[in-house]
Image (cartoon, rainbow, N blue to C red; front, side, top):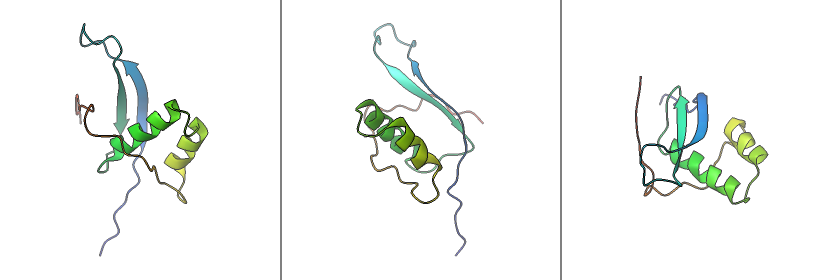
Amino acid sequence: MEEQNTIREITYAKIEKANFSPMATDIYFLNIKASGFLKYMVRYIMGALLEVGQKKITVSDFQKKLTSKLDPSLKKKAAAHGLHLIEITY
């Protein structure tokens, strides 16, 4: 059985304030670009960002989890409701 490569390079990531709806005054989105995406990858990233915002983990902990080959685990997956895929480009 061939080993699957699970390494993806994130080339851009920024949390931005939404400006696509006049009713959306407090809505933000994650603009993320990568070499590819794994199943639930963005949900795990969003879960970790929520934990950073809630001060359950530090930004340094988050960075270590993204780059560590020894402990690459992000434990909390953001719920699917409330998450929307806006655009895919190739």
